[in-house]
Length: 286
Image (cartoon, rainbow, N blue to C red; front, side, top):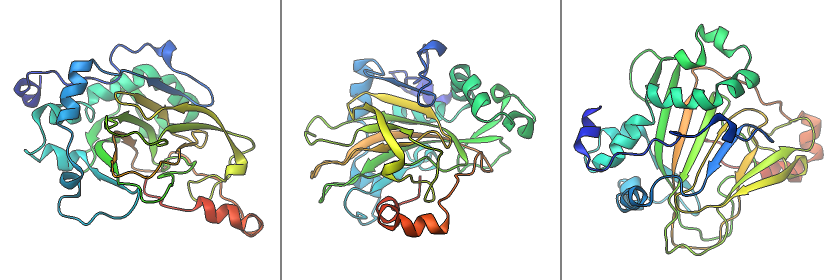
């Protein structure tokens, strides 16, 4: 047991604990989702101790409407203003124990998607050395856990249109903390399927190339995770005007190199689809 775990009365939840491999969906790509992801009493405590927007900004000016702002594991573990329960949660979800739970459920899906990756590293996924992102030390994989808020919305927009996460990331997850006062529409997690062979503008797709197949509601105490690859097109539905931030935890598994290379539109296609390209190109930080 870690020192942080010993400090807290309530045990921090382990998000994939108890999930069976046969609960992982394979279409249109490997993913898992769950409502009421953790016990209600644990969720209530985590929600009560979720940092405010002001704490996450930490003196910075708000960057604009419907923009993602975050605190990373490196910031959280070193900040005594964050509750012990949350710091224990972050510590576990950037640990080898957490990664072994990921590979218990998604190891075969990772092998199918990235057949040469274990040979390149020289170890099975289950045996990879992991470290929290931002900390020194040798590692095959860096894990991050982040407090994230999408800032208040002044104009109906999507914080993230259809895209894949950056190509050094092979596994991602979200844990939603919707404010009970939040009654606007949108902010849902949308899963897409390619209509054709993948083609990208950076990490974005054009709407004409994909179709929506599944929506996971932005709901309190809901969780979703997936293997990130060129197949894993996902986005966030447009969110209505509101003063209430969209709150969630972001989980990242990052390699020191690219796991895949998104095939880009060629120059002629970019000219032909200029309007679509302009609509698709926005923020590329994820």
